[in-house]
Image 1: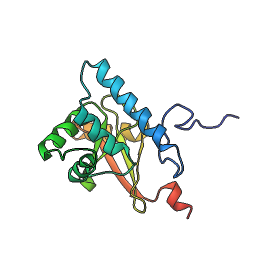
Image 2: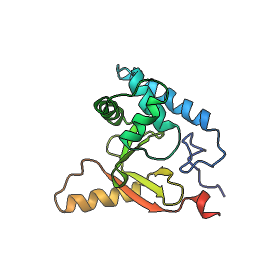
Image 3: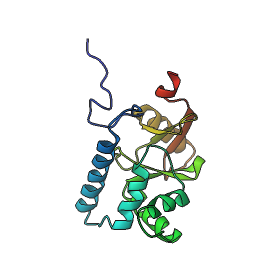
Length: 170
C-alpha cells in the first residue's frame, strides 16, 4: 500500500517549513525561480524588484509595504513608497508575491499556480508563518457556489487562521 505524496516528494516546498530548514537554500531557490519566470516572459527582475522579493523571502511571514521599505533600506538607500508598491504590483502580476488581505501584507510565493487556481493561505496565529495549500475539491466547491449565483471570481483566495504543525507540537 502506497503512502500519500507530500509537497516535498513532488518537488514543492513544505506548507510549513521546519524551523531548522535550510532557509538560505529556500530563498535562493525561490529567487532563481523568479529570475527564470521573468526571463521566460521577457520581463526584467530589476534591482528594486529583486530587493523587495528578497525582503519577503527573508522569512515565511507576511510583511507590510513599510516593513519591506525598512528592510530594503538596511542594504542601501530607502526607496520611496511608490517604488515599493510598483515592485509589489509587478511581483503580484507575475505570481511571485501574494497579498494577505487580512494582514494588509505580502508574502513571497514559493509555489507554482495555474491561472485561476484557488489559493488557501494558512496563517499561524502563534509564529505568524503563512503556508500555502491547494485543494481541487475546495476549488470546485467555491467555483460551483459562485456559478450558482452568477458570480465570476476574480481572485479566488481563502485565508484560514490557526496553529501550524510546528507550534502545535509545543
